[in-house]
Length: 168
Image 1: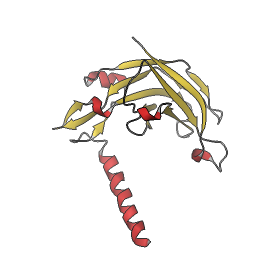
Image 2: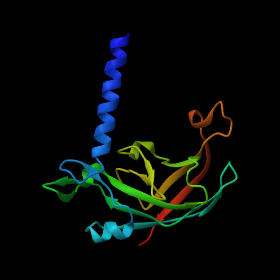
Image 3: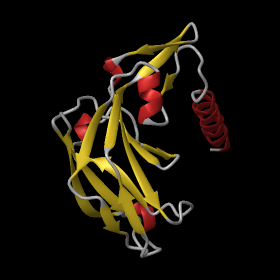
Image 4: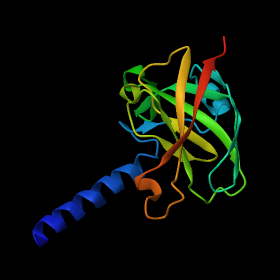
């Protein structure tokens, strides 16, 4: 039993290390731009999507505001150069504003979970989704941490579905 614990701990540390170095521009690792301006400057084709709703009252009383989403093709690095590769899907960035950024009380997810390549992430006032395919309309769920502390993130509450429409 203890041996299994050590093996699991080793793999957890190993994969955490891989995730950490994945943020650097090293060969074979994935990346994404921090802003749509950065994506454009790096040669990515940026597509924008406008949401059907922009303001949300979160369950903890905080006000959330989202902006026009933007996408770029996924990329890796080879010989320290960025290689665009749509085989790994896209990054769908949803910029947001919230007063207390430190409270992790919401996340966005694709409604069509079969269209998801990688797990989602949230950083620098942007939430990133990773769809395989971009459609004219992208449906996104706003999930919130359950205020019942015995449930929390184990049983989040879906409070809204946002429809992002491609700007032509």
